[in-house]
Image (cartoon, rainbow, N blue to C red):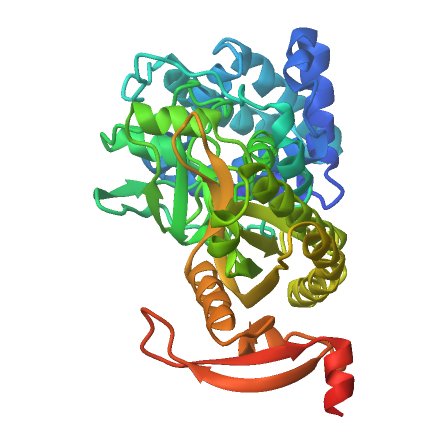
Length: 495
């Protein structure tokens, strides 16, 4: 236990050294690498400004807890385990302590007299002993399935290039902005609630994984807690502001996997207050999913305009024509609709017989609203069908009349299906409603029918509406307002 007077000297001296320009951290690493050049290799790909800020943060928390050392011991042992995982040997703590002393002397100048230096050396000795103890303790409670799966995807083919246009930059989820964390009033301990499991007690700056290990929660972490596998991922349901922002290791994995802000790596996420979370990986099947799922496979919710297109009366056409003619006619129709969809940033999700499901809103680079893109694509497809019908009428004696339905709302997107044949798609009420709106358009002999949610998002004068109707859709208790959209020449006739 420190004497009150010595504790005050430590706080005051570090407060003087902890300047806004971050020079103390810069001096610390300069001395550290000068004393042991081999350590510099550990930081080759690290942003040293961010790293320096984390060191200062750790020292502030440690100083807050030094009056009751048992309270801060768990945090120091956690840091020791983390350093060991990144290749730092316990004996190198003595070198780090010496670099710390020299940085204080360089920053404080004459203020750093022999008496103050002695207090700091004694304190740092206790701190590094605790960190070395943590490094020497085997983390045997980490749950490691017998088979380790290689991260990354190995089943991409040339057929995926169309989907890849919508999966790269467009679906990256930005990290939530988080304010600087102040340690002035950090609690000595706080609760971490594992949904469906138990409540645990944590100390400031412990990682979620450390909390799991100390509370006998068998937390999967295949890579050994160095942020290279994402199998320790959790969903922070409450208290995201009590988690320090993602470090560089976690940020790289979050970008690779397309994690939304609340999905965090337990081995990297440090806590400063109470949180409620849910572990997401529990068995070998989950491990395989976590290791091999890319950013396009992680389910997430986003606003979408969903469009369904179908041919009215296609079955009689198929029954009365040769298979070659049926396929040939369908492909001419698909080409016209696909070209219209492509020109307006839509993603052809799937073909359902003679029907097509299209998603608008995946591309973040478009300036237009998904609803505007969807309606423009639908109008262009309808006009484009004239050339198809000219051909069909001349050669097959039949024409195609299409029905289109569009709805707008939140949908869940991600790769779904058997592991050998998965497909990126959307699910949710927005999809079901769009399909039923298209069905109503077909039943009521309407070319293009949209919901009120779509109409509200359209710019003025984009299109003209015809009939409006209150629809009772299958599976829905409330009615849905829908509007017929007229082709430009039909709207002109009506006026």
